[in-house]
Amino acid sequence: MKYQPFLLRCLLLALLIGFLASCNQSKKQKFSVEDVPDPKKSGGGYVSNPDHLISDATVTELNEKLSTLDNAGKAQVAVVILRSIGDNETRDFAHKLFNYWKIGDKEKNNGLLILMVEDARKLEFETGYGLEADMPDIICFRIQQEYMIPRIKEHNYDAAFTDGVKSVASLFDNGNYAYDMLPDLPGADASLMATDSETVATDEIPPPVTAGDAIDVAPQSFASTEEATSSASNDYTGDFSFMAIIFWLFISAAMMHVFFGKKAKRRKENADEEPLAVTAVPNEFLRPRWIGLIIIHAIAFYTIFYLITKRHMDVGFLKVCLIYYLVWLVFMHVAVLLIMLRTAVMLKNDDRHLKWLRLEVLRRDLRIAGYIFPLPYLWLYIMWLKNRLNHLRNDVYDCPQCAQAMHKLDEAEDDTYLEKGQVVEEKLDSVDYDVWRCDTCNTQTVLNYTNMRSALADCPSCKHKTYKCKKTVTKQRATTSSEGWGIKEYVCAFCAYAHDYQFVIPKISESSSSSSSGSSSSSSSSSSWGGGSSGGGGASSSW
Ligand SMILES: [Zn+2]
Ligand SMILES: [Zn+2]
Image (cartoon, rainbow, N blue to C red; front, side, top):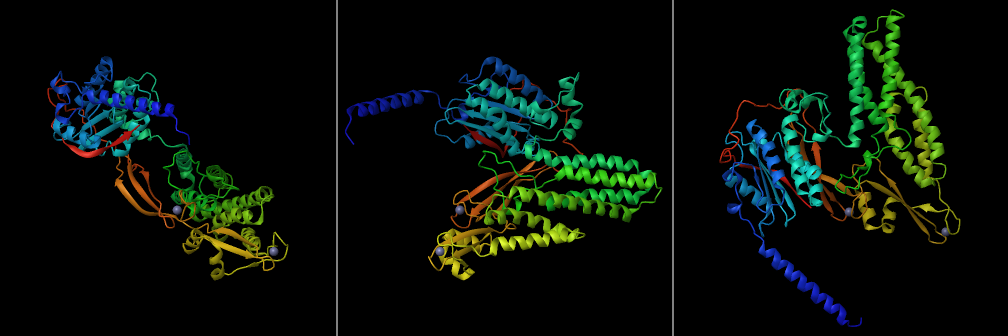
């Protein structure tokens, strides 16, 4: 490459600018834990904003909100917004500052420190022990990610802190940090909602769920309406048939899940989503799910109702079971008929190998249905499917080069034609490879046959089905008032790629809600924090 003085000059200029910029940076104040201005010592507020990164109006607004929260005895929150803390680690800094100021009530330990350090591009939440149940780490993280970080990225610090504090206040007032998801109660005073209807709000508003989960909830809500209607017929039938219906509500939901699998997961761009194990891959031909459940229960319930009211029959536990069984039997046969039609259309243009892969998922799930509802035809269909899969896989291939019949190598022989990763897959029983070889012209074809009952997943790094959950660690147990969370540690058995995935443990559903103690109060303009100490909980986000 030719030496270019112009480029060199540009480089020098860039270095000079960089140097000047770093000089400028070193001029700004780097705070240590001891010299962060304590708002309690200068007017009794909750916000320390020495670099004026948010406006005075916002500081006033935040102080008002936080003082309400503090006076209600729910949480004592300090907001600290700094330009720089030098080379100090922000997580460590937050912990030390929390304990230096002693944020939170001494007995309740309900302190929360929200710290932003601009040049480190870090936002930290540090919580006291007393808040760990009401404000677990995962909720801290969500508040940061959903309400603060997006605004911070836009340099709209005022909005970031207003919305962040609003979310924290909402969490303590309604049990739900997602304040903009709460339904508007017409005519209801916001302050009334915060105190009186607190328990109601906690019970009725579930934490926001992702789109995939939202549909999973549907069968349950259906179940509860069904329970209500069936209890109406309780007078006619007696307790046993009522119990049978409840029993079948659960059985039906379980069977629907086993026979047709989960809803296909919509993959988000989010790379941190847990990978889908082969077992969890759903069939593509039919997934009636809750629509199927509604049909089954509606028909069964109508039949029971008809027999009791019109035929004056005494329908007990066994008869209800028989009715449900027959409805399911018909349902499964109709479903299989639909599946036969759909497979014929959908697989029309696929080659033998692809057909096998798509049909094998179907066989994995329907096999059990074949045992439970064999007659009149379901068992036959399963046997036919098995036979068809066998042909798709084992019928002799013709050589693509010379059109002679090829022959399949046995398990011991084929390893020499497989890549290392493929051999590992065979060892782990996630994929079985067939190697077809033409003796005339030495052509070989390698075909993969996935074991659809394997719990392994695709490795994000080497793409082999050698990725496995090695360990599940619960980091925070779910309580009745808050979700828990944990980490699943995945490792690839072939390329050793490892990654952790965070998961949420749903709240323990019990109608008892978080206790609120509105009676205790401390003066809003006290000149010190409450004497609390950090529990080491919290979360940090960077941008
Ligand atoms: Zn050949
Ligand atoms: Zn790998």
